[in-house]
Amino acid sequence: MTLGLINANPVVHAKKERVARSEDPHGDDAVDPLEIYDILPLFSILNFVRDIRDPEHPYSLEQLSVLSEESITVDEKLGRILITFTPTIQHCSMATVIGLCLRVKLKECFPPHFKLDIKVAPGSHADEDSVNKQLNDKERVAAALENPNLRQLVDECLYSNEL
Image (tube, rainbow, N blue to C red; front, top):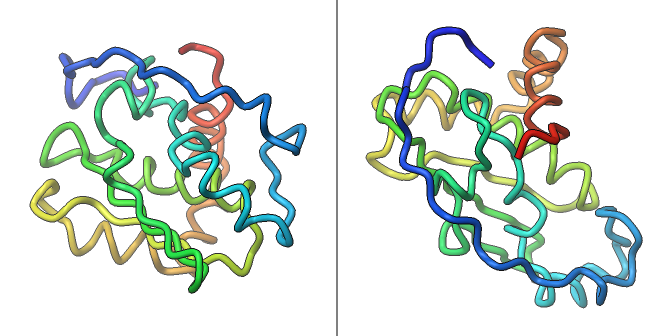
């Protein structure tokens, strides 16, 4: 976590009820590419990313209303996933870290032929175009994930038990 909080008092919402994953034919989050179309209707993409921890606070992205069911679109026929997230404040410096977390988690869960588009919601960030460009540029994403400090922060957000 960072020392100087950008948003010291975020609005925290209650966790929503979880869909039981016992129906999932897979023991982990990995998805068999041949069965992807059967699984997507059962478990929304939100179930894969809802517990990612915010980089600044010990709350999930769902609890901070950064993500919701409505902010995720799946086009099964084209193999595209669009996630539009809303940072808690307009000048959030952690928006790119949040986007990286979403990309890394979904890359782990879905086959590589799925196209991931990750964007900040229109009007929700002061530097919206720049953030969107960074999050969807393969070379920038790869370079960011090669940075050990940034990679550590992403891993803490993905695998933290603080929630």
